[in-house]
Length: 567
Image 1 (spheres, rainbow, N blue to C red):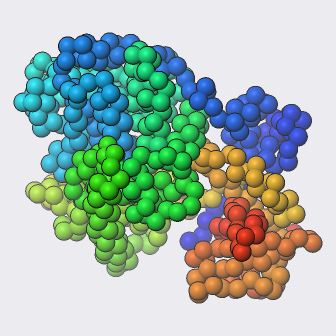
Image 2 (cartoon, helix red, strand yellow; image 1 turned 90 degrees about the vertical axis):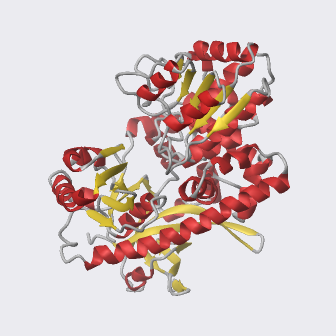
Image 3 (cartoon, rainbow, N blue to C red; image 1 turned 180 degrees about the vertical axis):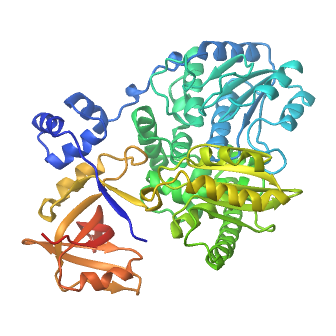
């Protein structure tokens, strides 16, 4: 698929000031300015994360109220229920708060709603469970901010709610005794991008201070916090970057038995990074809720015995294998459906439906379809008497707005700019397909229908060195708003040693001026003809460490190739 290349700029004046202060390569200063770092102190804070950089938890609106209500529960021996969502952020949040509160009381339990029986967030079934079992206080984590009616229902039943959430609040807030959510308009907490487990971490930090507990009482959960940050795709900036940095450190040095078991099952042997948590660990956790019951993910995280943790991890591993099998089968069927549509090439959207598809993986399948056909995509299946599904967007297109325009065909819908879910009556399907295509076609631009690679800087090959790479590595952990830098090298030539490996991957050996650099390009056999043509071409790449027989060198991981523009 042809991609647009977009070279990001940085303010030259700020770059010069920063270079004068840091005395490092100007391209590294460009990367820092692009990340909002423009002076020595900001750079020092960025390159040398410290737990001292974490914000005071008491700055969060309602923190005092939340701690006071928990204290009443502890002093009166009231029963507390930790109620969380079924994804990675939700299950890590539950495991973190549950284990911390267990240090203060034995009257603690947790509840994860069943994805298919109860749906997302706070549920009536869950509230009724709490009432029947004599709970006095429910603490919702990674959910609750939208559950105004259900929390009012809990209040009528005589139970209090504390909400720990990070999703955008509505104008009318639920009647909880305390709401911890930095996105509230009147919350002055200095960082707004915490994930659900991050909000829980602030709560347990405040509780530990209140009860004169050592820092280890809450820092021991940083590995779970980092896993949630990675999986929830929140910005790796400010406080999230600090939490992720020390959380990944704990994952590598002393992970909880549950995380260690998952890493072993996923055959993760090298140092773990955010990307390992995203692609190897998170899918195994999410699979529990997608295929069955996410409660076992919490059981894994709170288990202290390694062998028992491995047993729980093996169940999640099997769920993930089942998820992958369903994902692969449905993706193949959906692609066939798209490609058999005679109007497929003219459509601006893709909507596919089969009544038997597993609804736990339709969101993943929608993302897979976008990799092949870059259009806003909806994958639908039947659930009882209704059709239900998930939508995914392309970069820059407001999916929620397009769905809102089709609301007359829907029984319900929810989501945000990039992803959403919906339900409709079976007989509404054809009308919805037409309406969604019209809504997308009238709003989307041609540029939005072409995937874009954002390039941070033009990097001549003779500037690639181990020292340069080591400074790049100190920018980790990488993630949204702090992505691994992408470079372009222009007017390069094949040295004659470039070759195709396993008929799929290109082993690059290129030259620019007097400098030769090696690299690898995965799954790009179609480019070999251009590279071997003898004509100049441009490479888009990232830098990676290559280790061979005890020797280390820096090489390119090539992302895309295009012919050089003739001057």
